[in-house]
Length: 234
Image 1: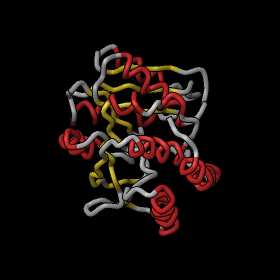
Image 2: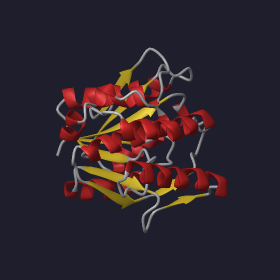
Image 3: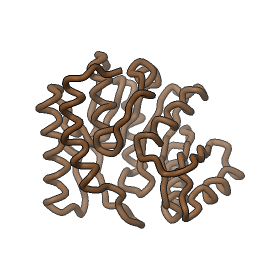
Image 4: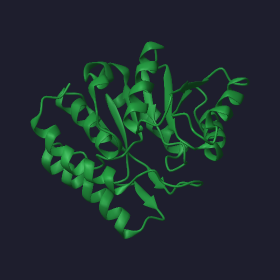
């Protein structure tokens, strides 16, 4: 299946080059789309330079920083309009490993939505504090109890979608960002009756730069889960 990996970026100049190389080496059949929010560190320049040597690398430049959710929505729209049948989400900071992507893609035909999961057997995290583990694992348990589906990693952002799923869940109307974006997207798919599978991954700390996650994003997810549960989605 024609596959593209969407990578949202904001100030990832030091990571994006090596990360694209790792994906192209591990999964040479996959195209790459970098969605850059006008990074001050000129992340886009690195991508443009790589495009000159590799026709499977693409760049979607946006005017400014609007959040992770809006970046992914723009990327999904581009991927569908360009005929990609399978669409992956990954972070540029190496917390999502290209070696895990290969395993997910090899098994993606078994479900409509394949989730890279830290909280199933064989999955895990590296160099995380107990506080960070508590927030992430607790957030997924919390979401699962409220939303009523047996997903163990609701907040993870390492996912592979069949394009038809994205079309059917009306992804353009999603307003969430951060953790809540990941939760809402999965919930919409499950409510539509699509099959999801969780595939174990090892989530590592970013190699370079600072995390863009904040307590505001965590709190947003806590209250939005209740809205997802009771409002009409899609």
